Image (tube, rainbow, N blue to C red):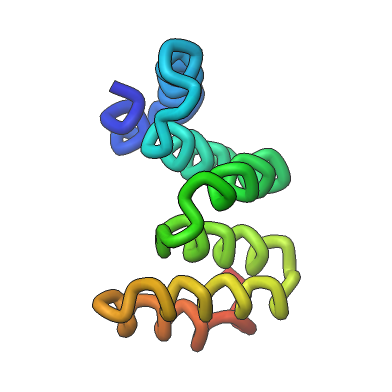
Length: 111
């Protein structure tokens, strides 16, 4: 439900649903990732970064985690850290190379 709410722009409701899901299953990595994604959409960047750092420890080979962290660091104007995260995502998921490379090329653009 949280993912549907997020897709429909109901961010606060999505966050609440994902937090409830994590109360039931605190180890649910998908719910943790989606929560971080909602936090980014809400511009709660530091909270999202902390969620992803914790998630990275339990799922170290998941490229989307590093990609989203790269987007956060870009928004925080920490370009070197963003580049490191995007590079790690690229190393883990070569099938998404074009998408990740496009993000790398836009690192110095203001969004």
